[in-house]
Length: 454
Image 1 (cartoon, rainbow, N blue to C red):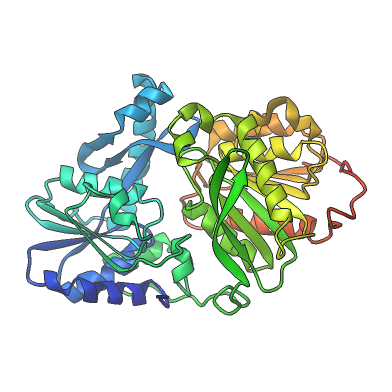
Image 2 (cartoon, helix red, strand yellow):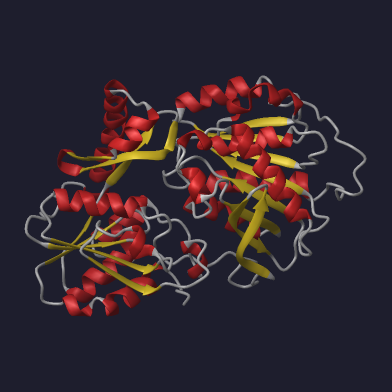
């Protein structure tokens, strides 16, 4: 099933939740994208609407790996196992919580203004998002709502993977979903318009108004369906890795994504970037760097050499596929994945045409940085101060053509309005400039060093 936009999805979801009419309900939307959906549910059920503002507590220097979550009213939910395995001290935990608490309170004030939050004590609480990918935010929201006294928690979304209730078992009392299609590789796949929701749109919803409807960009996937868009299995050494390959109708290059620790091919941020690249004729392959069994050993997540080797093996597989054979290949790395991407690109005969790092840790590629020949773009949030310093230090070691782009106002996960879009457009333009003009791998005579730029 494909929804026109979040308003359409909300109306479909409201019909699924009609059985709740007349109960003592509160509808909570997850900002930002879940709020327009929640508005339609609240209207249909004649229930009060509010936001549920939660913030993930990320491991220091690896914020994509969640060690807990916080909510309003001083609620904190911790995953003690992650805290222990990551070696996070009480001082470090307190610092992360204070930073995220400040941002949580800022967002809550921004969305509600002078209005008080709706009380959840003893209520049936319906938590609404625009879809489920990994489910980490939804899980935190359910836990926070329960900690605030909700008598019954219902998690409701328009679209989710087939196994979503297994992933979130125990976090909610009930689950509601319009469609659980297969294959499922990202929420945005099932919306004609999945443009970002702004803070102003969230505020308009809470005040009872509809957010503006934004048309799908011309030439986007809604108009030009890809020739290949499916889950794939890639043999990498002794293990079989899951991935998702999207090849547009007219393809000018291909980008392989390397995600950070605590993430996967379902990463909503990487999926968003991939969709932007697909719209300009770039094929994308998102894949899990580790098997489920390997992920149980946290040491593997930070084994950059292992992850880089996986990237190389997957690239070999990709170059043998009929739809992508002969195309120039780029790497897009996020967090620790950026270190793996640069390590792999530095390998002799890798023939990687371009590398982009988003909120990455290029420093993890260490002494391999000087051997990278692919033009490299480092994208960092202006408010991600520690990672920005690490990127500057890593850039000083690069000898290839390179650039450091700082997105104003962005923190590590580019959650602020417009910041992920800005990062995606930077990546798109870099890949367009460097992949399209590259010779085919079998035609290339050897790597060429560019001129360093800043």
